[in-house]
Image 1 (tube, rainbow, N blue to C red):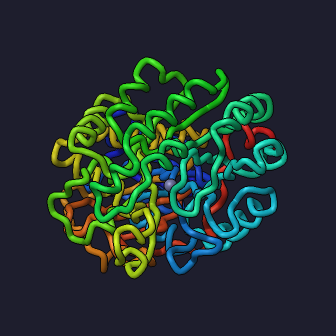
Image 2: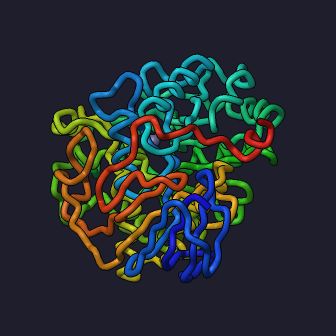
Image 3: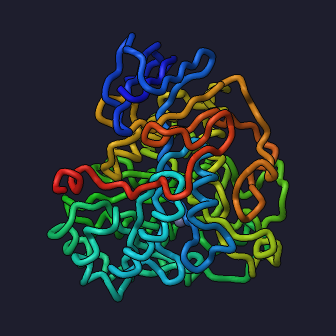
Length: 437
Ligand SMILES: [Zn+2]
């Protein structure tokens, strides 16, 4: 055994006192007692949880590295207890070909402190040639409606794409579900969050989800990103087989009427938009009852200057990869959401959806762990976060940050300090690809 981590760990839905033996980055043995390893960690007051997996980040590289890059993005993620991120394709150039996908993998390999996966975007131009790219990316991303720097797939090509994929690849398809035609019909000048919601009503989300459910094939693995409205949840009830649902922290924390606003409205401009209190309540209910599968940050940083403009001019998106797990750990402490749900939403289910060997403290999985002192509650402050954009919509909120973040058995964060190395992060392979190697 080269590493042994001992303490109270979250295993099979309960906290148990164990030793976790690690060999070559993987958990090789879990037992009450294990012989000493070459490196040994013993935690008494903290708990050991699986590290989080954030399946939805925009690390802005290549093309917009003044907003974020693979180094600052993965450092922020590690401080927030995340051991693996999946990066979205709306970069410059966009990740839509074999070359741009391979180039981005190379970039990320050189700079990442934690593991990563990549999405290739599906557009009206490339959807027929996707077989070529399928083996390099981890999954696909489709935008059915325009957001900031997005790539669109027309609704009429969706059905054909689903069929091509069914025949050629079992990789998941992540979808931004807002219907473009519907968005165009509602377009108007926007001055605040209420106008933004009027311009992107829940109707447009519902319309897009209806199309997905209508055109999808049985074998397609579909994930609907950032579901934000009660009506969408209603529509998905009873029709959810093989469709997974993600929600973001911001859609379960803020409605369009934000109570303690620390920044102007333009900073909270995001797509899908912040909705009503009823929508927020509905999403929270279904985080608890298990209907919602995962939490995804949709970390979409823009600089303070870019956001600090007239509402109508401001780009959409807000940062969140570093604060997601810590905010929900605080929720667990406050009994707002049980710990087993948080671990399922942030670790276990994301790993299942992306088909990777992470997200659980179990033999055979990567030794991706966080060590958390549940009594160490901190206030979120921009100065202590690690984003390039230097602002957070969660300023002043309480959170529990991990003391350690281990990625494949190595600490990237130790005693709340970065000790990881640039370039340590690897592209994750899905379980099937790994067997083929
Ligand atoms: Zn996104």
